Length: 101
Figure (tube, helix red, strand yellow):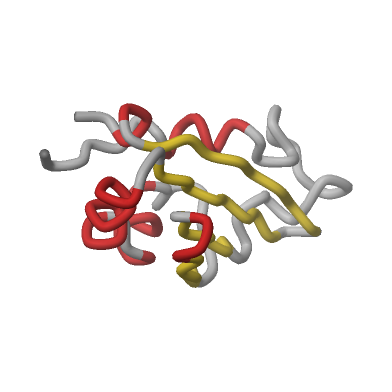
């Protein structure tokens, strides 16, 4: 199944850093996401984009994971030649990730 079937996402940016939150629809799915959506898996998923580290933060009270993607926006809004300089579409791209039932 696609991650989007059990979660939604938000994206923010600051300079060359993109921040993606993955928010589960319920606690059962939060546990599934915690097990399967790791920092390394995010880095691999966006291997053509991320040039830096990926850090994952768990927020159990919100049933969410927060990922900080360093060097992920081509230098940032004022330097990037990317069509999506803010990285807002990264959340949608992440939700296409396959998750095991």
